[in-house]
Every structure is written in structure tokens, then in C-alpha cells.
Image 1 (tube, rainbow, N blue to C red):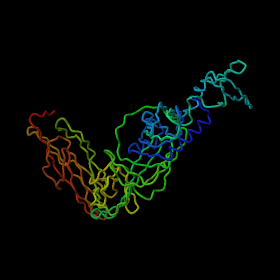
Image 2 (image 1 turned 180 degrees about the horizontal axis):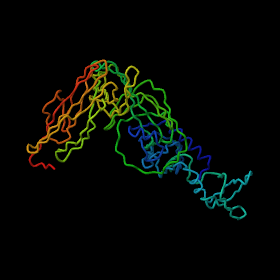
Image 3 (image 1 turned 90 degrees about the vertical axis):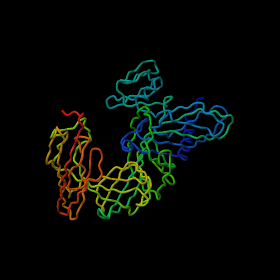
Image 4 (image 1 turned 120 degrees about the horizontal axis):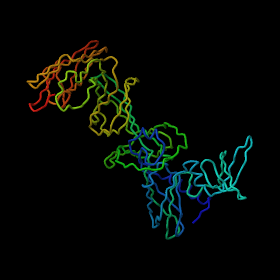
Length: 489
């Protein structure tokens, strides 16, 4: 059934308004940075589920209906329209928005067009049937002549060619047994939407009396190619596996702007969502295309117990050798190495927290001064958190290998290492020194000036107290052994 342009416009506007007024949007975490920097396209970064209710006035029999205002990054294979009544969905089509001038001309072949051409300071107009479009335009004029325009200023079409739309559009053929208003449930997935947590931590007190205040918000980015206004928004902390579906790349037809909206008055409570955690945002949310919205995610936590740590380690890799490395120059790392400040806390109720913490960026301040930023992974309740914040100015470390020997007959070798830490602070500090044991898997520390803490297969750490305005030294000897059947080059 062929509709007039006016009838199509009325149907499209009604469906779009109903879609925007009753929409539930679920946005999954992950791909946030990629979404912010990308254009809307199917199969692109970001993932969200959209659910809404549609209502149509149907005549008895077949009814063509359309829905516009859709994301350019919509996954067409995911669209499901389910009748709530006895109507049936006979067919479904998704039309991507017009991609550009070349596509428009290609689809307009055979239509009557008007083309303007500049001739000196004047303009000449030609009207005819478009026969070809490529390096210029070819028209069949009303008198039968064929006009080839190598250059032209602009062209005009009386209407969009069949099958082209000015915005992404879903079309269905609905079959009703009787005339009347019927309701449908619409659901689909789209790329171009993502979120991540954004935390601010304010610390006070020294290493022994550390307390912190934590506030958590969600940064929600919309680059899907459509506005989502007045939606019921749910944020899910989790990244389900997805197959990469391909789709036509959409031309950039707009200039996006990132905006920060005022925070809402309340934070959501986390709820289980399959294998993940979901946060239902109170009230409704507006997510305009090309925007970043800041939304409260966690209630503020005050006076949380924390620990401020200082750590240093030599830049030695974690490669495990296939045989004992008896070369004296193997991993002979010496010289100055940075001391890194970190903040540790337990995500437990007893410490003042205890809620699941979604992945995101953490900014840490001390009295208004930025200590550093770190990325926090998805953190369940009762988990230990350690955030590396940056290099400490007033603490330095210097590593030196003092001795090395190999006893082939005894199938062993020894290495003596020293690390000097200097403290220019006005208060004492304890620096944790991480030391790798990279030469072989069977090793023991035979002597040390500081007792080691926990160790794993290839490393140990030492807590070295350093006095204010002073220095301290760690010296240890490690002995490596190997079995008789181990080959030594």
C-alpha cells in the first residue's frame, strides 16, 4: 500500500513520541574511552539494551507502520517487536539514515532532478531525468537531449528516493484481525553507550592514622546517534561476552559536544543482575547524543580506615628462565629507582564501605592537593584495594649488586644486593622494597638486614623503616640451587 508523504510523517512522529516517553535503558560498563572518542556505528564500542512500549491505531488487515528517532548504532539483528494483543508482525525492516550525497544520487537515478551550474558570475538551471552520477551528472532533458554536467553547484530532488530515510527508521507490517488501538513491546541492542565509575577520595592523617572520604559517581557517555530523554536508566557493572557484528559505517553528520550535568539528589542501591551488579538510577534521566552525564552511584562514605604505603622495585621482568642464569650480567639492574606512593583500604562494612565498587577512575586528594589518579577494577565487597598514585618527591631509592659468585660443582650461585632509601621528609617513613629473584626457581635468602615479608615463586618484599631526614639500607644475599639433571651452558 502506497502512502502519501503526509501520512508517513504523521505515523513516524506519533511512533517516535511514544518511544521516547516510555523507554527503559540498560547501559553496560566497558569501552567507555572508546565510546567517547568514536562515531555512532553498528558493531562499534559500547553496549546497551533498550526496551519500550509502542501503541498503534490499526485498521483491520495489513498496516504499515514506522518508528524513527533511533540510534545510528542500533544492532538490527537484535530488534524484537512483540504484540501484547492478537496482532501479528508479518515483516520488519531497518533503514539506516542517508549516508551521504553519493548514495543519494545513486538512489535517485531515474528521477527528475534540478541541477544548477555556475557559468561565470551567473547560474544556469537544468531539469531532467538523472541518467548517471559519478564524475559529474548526466540528465535527459524534456526535449530528449542528453546533458552532461562535469561540474555543478547543487542539485534538487522533489522527494527522497524510495528506500531512503533522513534518520534511522524501523518499519513493520502489522496484521490485525480487528480495527483498534494495540500495544507492542519493543526491544533492541545498540552500541555507542557506555559508562564507568568516577571516584574522588580525600585522605587525611599520616601512614598510621589514615582516614579517607570516598564519593562515587557514574560517567555515562552517549555516542549512539540518538537522544535518550526521560528514560528509566539502569547501569550494569559487568562486560558480557559479545560477538563483533559488522554493519555499515555511518558518516559523521554532526558535531558532538561533551557536557557535564548536575548530579541527581540520590544514589542508587546495587542489585544483582545475572552475574553482574545493576544500579537503577532513581527517577528519569536525560542522555542527549554527544554528551557525558555525571550521575551519583554510591552514597558518600566518611572516615574510612586506610593505609598509605611507599613502595619501590627494580625494573626486572617476570620471565622465568628455562635453566639457571649464571651469567654475571643477567638482570644486573643498578642505580636509582622511583619510590611510588599508594593507598590501601578494605572494601568492608567494618571499614565504612562494603558495597560492590564498579570499575573506574579514582582521584585521590590530600587537603586539596592531588596525590594521583589510578584505575580501579570491578571490586567485590570485602576485597583488598591497593591504588598506586605516583612517584614520591622526598623519597629516593638506589639499588646495587655488591657480589656474585657461581659454584658449578656445588650446583649453586649466590648474589648479594643492597638497596639504600633516602628520606627527605620531616617524618619517618616505611618503604616496601620488592625484589625479584629472576635467576632460577629454587632459591633461598641466606642472610638479610631486614626480615622479608611474604614471598612468591620469584620475588620477596622487605619493609624498610627510614628515619626522617635520613637513610636506611637493605642488604640481602640470595642463594640459587639446581638439581644434578639440570643443564648449565
